[in-house]
Length: 212
Image (cartoon, rainbow, N blue to C red; front, side, top):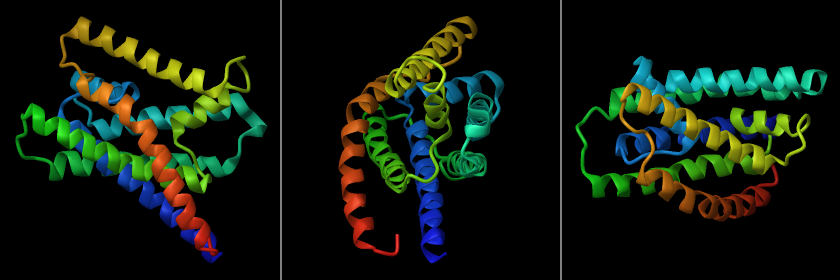
């Protein structure tokens, strides 16, 4: 019971860390990843808070998993819903209640983006190492592998491509600000390698803690 409580405490902490990091990447204003940029573009279009839009998209991904997997859906993954809500609430709080200062430095934005991306990586690495509850989009892409003849990484990449196409379409059609930029490229370069480093580090730490 103690180990389960500890695991889910770390998972919650991981989601909070991701939410904080993501809010700072948005504040950096140099572009974010395609899936995340979709929420930012919809925010410019609808004025609904970014975190709230993220909640809606992520919860839709959970229901998509249920529809695809049916009785094969692992019901522990229903925790993706409250965790997605927590993630959205953290993003909204940090972005709209804490990061209220004006910030328009391009170089400063790049530095902020790199640091905040590494913060996101820490949260994602913790969650992936524990391997209990996944992120909603990744869960949906994994569910799709059961019904289409493509591996996970291809489907996940297609999700980003589709998000990118939607963003371009919305931006050109409505003339809202671009939510993709140099930060999108930086994220592609540093996220994967950083994730590998932190996952190895956390695996060593958590394995040493025999109660996890």
